[in-house]
Amino acid sequence: MKFESKPDNLAEVSEEKEIKPEVRKRYLQKLAERIGTGVLASQLLLAGGGFIQEYNQIKKSVGVESLEGETGEAWQKILNGLPKGVVGEVESSRIKFLPQESAPRAGYQFLDSAPERRVAGRYERTPGLSPEIRIYNDPSDKEFLFHQGRGVLIHELGHANSWDEDEELNKEEREALHVAVSKRIHAENRHLSTYVESLEDDDAKKQEYWAEIFKEYFVSPNDLSYEDFILVDRVVRKQDPDFNLLEYVKTSRETLVQVYNPEMKAEKVKKNVKLGMESSNLEEKLNELLRLSQQKNAS
Ligand SMILES: [Zn+2]
Image (cartoon, rainbow, N blue to C red; front, side, top):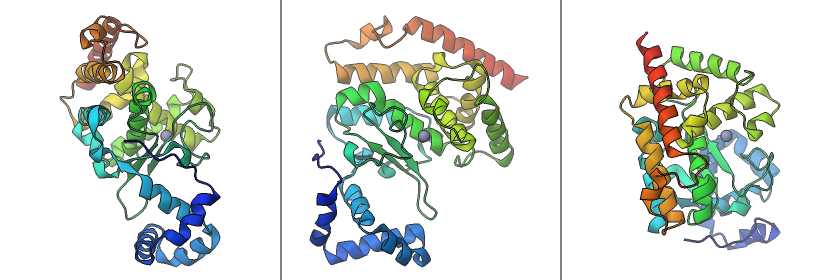
């Protein structure tokens, strides 16, 4: 599928007249549930055309479960291959794609720190509603899927599996994770992300550092230090003790290569297609990380 490319501008706001009264009423009810009826009146007065813009965004969104074709299958595979407890934090009907141009700039991943990036993602938890992930890009864009899409989706799932959000963690585990990540953001051998480094507020840094190492765990685990690897590994093992990370990394890379360039045979991936590193190195480093992690868990 392709989104109709139509920027969020005044032309969109002027669409207000076209929204049928019953649709508008339903939307307002939804909005009222989200922000609480007490605040609703003042919010609407303040927001002006803002809610029309949001309505237009929601109207244009595409759920991950309704994606079709080969990119649709690839997205499903990438998602379904993840540990059940990790994916289960967000209902698949609440993982949505929206047109890139509808992404507001402030507060959205990547856009502030790297304006040239083509993508943004957002994890949103609104009291009374189940959490939602929004990805601002066309899911049928193969280049996006290959280079960044999987990472953005998993980064947002990282927020859903944090010390604040993960349903499977107990109080002690939440506290331990929070303390550990608070230390990691200032550690000399911390995972370097231009996005995280660009943030000044420590709370934001912690949240984003966690989402970034969470993403790296599933995308390029051999790029993580042991200290970061084990933090994510503990959370993942708690939810799915038998999860085969090596298999997941290999399979999802093969899936991406096949979608992006059908001439490249999956067989080549195993012999190191240029995906940033050698697969043999991945396997070796990953086995070492897993071994260390098991030792630590046993002791
Ligand atoms: Zn984030």
